[in-house]
Length: 299
Image 1 (tube, helix red, strand yellow):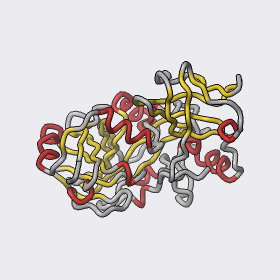
Image 2 (cartoon, helix red, strand yellow; image 1 turned 90 degrees about the vertical axis):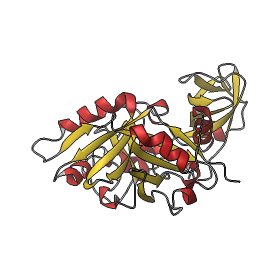
Image 3 (cartoon, rainbow, N blue to C red; image 1 turned 45 degrees about the vertical axis):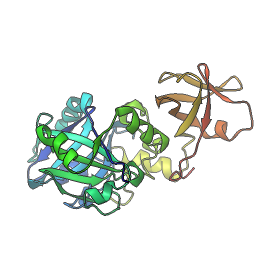
Image 4 (cartoon, rainbow, N blue to C red; image 1 turned 120 degrees about the vertical axis):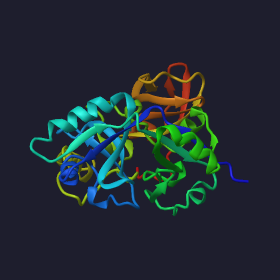
């Protein structure tokens, strides 16, 4: 029997970018290629500082009611900052940026049979209209299932009718963390984290052929000069879960820092040389960490 779950993500909100220049406007700022955004394909991307450091991550879809408008699924508590930063670059562009948080809800859909229940092909980012909004396979990793942007007042009932049982936040968080996928600013340090330490390359969040975007030059230099010395990776936690920001130590030397966790699983940004060394255990607070390399990662 399929075990399909749905979680309304109250930590996410939706901005809407419309106007004749919306695609050109976003293309110069985000890490992915906006020309690949289609009615049948969603994208994951980031907005960086000019120095190539993380500011925001988000999903992009076309508005099912207006294919000339783009919906941005972003962190709810930081949507005002994202809107403000995007607005700085509007200048004379024919672009309107609006907060549609009251209009749309974002949901994560996961479990066996998810793609079939939504009539989606099992390709990252595959999208189609669903229940007055749209649903799409997670463009980062198929093992994460799907996402949906739905009319807020109808989302729960629409998901129930499609055969999805309500999920607990902890269940989805354990799935995300076990796969080594970052959860926005919980795992990436604002104005400090390079994308490539956090899997954006392998998780389809970067397009190396699209041309210039804010922070592109330094991001490309980091990749082609092999300057990445740390990686975010899943860890098994033996002991009490360390708080985010707890230093990770090996043989008395700092090896990294703890990020988000769910019960006995967590994410930690770790130095690759420390992980590869044959020294003592990785320690964070009162817990021992056992790192696991995700199947999708190239390090």
